[in-house]
Length: 200
Image (cartoon, rainbow, N blue to C red; front, side):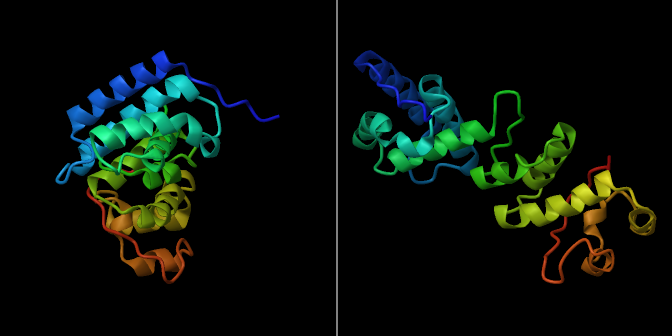
């Protein structure tokens, strides 16, 4: 049975609006020229503040609950800070729990891909690689699969490739043909170069 959507009291709505307004002001959200990292940090903070009131409820059913908060933000700051933006903030907060490291260079789509990795050490390593190299979300998953293969399989073929090309720079700097020959990638999958990080 679906959880009943909560009804927030006027005081809770007022306090939530005040808290989120302070975040918007501190991070200059909704303004032209706001840098990506400040926007990501602000979105995560807003999502976590909203989660204090609505944790566990389906995002798709929160339009009515978020409406007064969104109206406040749109009226006082920017039309871009509406319900769709707030739901995206909640998604980010749910994808990046309090005990998970956060790199503001990455987007929600990056973290949704990383969240599929159960091993925390592997997830942290891949998150840092993606952030260090400014990978777009569209190339994170292919690169994650390559990195995970090297990390977890440790096959003789992989080790031979590491010996040939060296573990630093990391093996995802090898020629694309090396991955195709090991059947690690399809023939159309791009392998972005990465900065040097030791293979664990």
